Image (tube, rainbow, N blue to C red; front, side):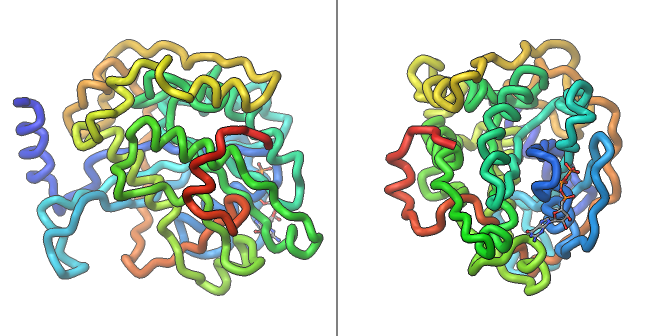
Length: 336
Ligand SMILES: Nc1nc2c(ncn2[C@@H]2O[C@H](COP(=O)(O)OP(=O)(O)OP(=O)(O)O)[C@@H](O)[C@H]2O)c(=O)[nH]1
């Protein structure tokens, strides 16, 4: 395990310096569901009054600290804390870009699917988004098998515009896609048993992103946990439990059933095979699982937006809010 020792030493050397790595998160969903608003809120911590329609794709970068703090002070990082860039690729949902948007599906570590709780069809189209990304994208640190539509990386689903849905009396369905995502991640050993993906939290009350941002309601956990999961998978997969996906045969996992049942039209396609040069973008030595990745496009990260530890992100309405964890984990049907 020499590589691990070397990596730890290098991480220590850069500790306190600039971010040491990056994960790329695709944000997809139908036009107008609120992807740009969501990204703005995640990155800036505030709502955006009149977001213009995204042209092709827009990239924002968030700074995330990963690791356990060895210090009691917020201002001094512990030895085991490192900074990472999280790139949020907000892809336009407009039909105009349908034929070319796959250009942006490159070296993806995770996906945020967004739908509008007041427009059911925006949720039923998520499997199509998943299949499109899975079929035409390339992935960083992919799993051995696919999730919905064959998607080989973790994802979360965010139901937006809870305020509109509440006003119009539309009840979000139970979000089985979300439950399945959780189950998929758990089954594959991506999360330690002590930690669960907060996939099914809701905005408190009936507010949407805008209301939540305005009121600065507290909870950045859902999204931040997701980002940390991606960072861990990419850079610290040796910290994963022994039942990690790298050692599980795809046929043993419920993932394929999950992908197939998402949608009858769903072509259960595997992600394109990966090959080529090592991932040069990183300053960290690659993990064994990363060594065969093709390099990403030379997108240079924008200046990170630093967030104070007290930054608050509202909970997103991801699905029905009244369910408890055990009920969620029993459901396998994808009935969006
Ligand atoms: N009421 C309400 N409106 C919202 C919410 N989130 C976003 N919006 C509004 O919905 C509209 C579309 O939001 P965008 O963030 O541009 O949607 P998008 O998904 O990025 O759209 P495309 O760029 O076309 O893909 C804007 O007018 C937003 O202000 C919300 O939670 N509640």
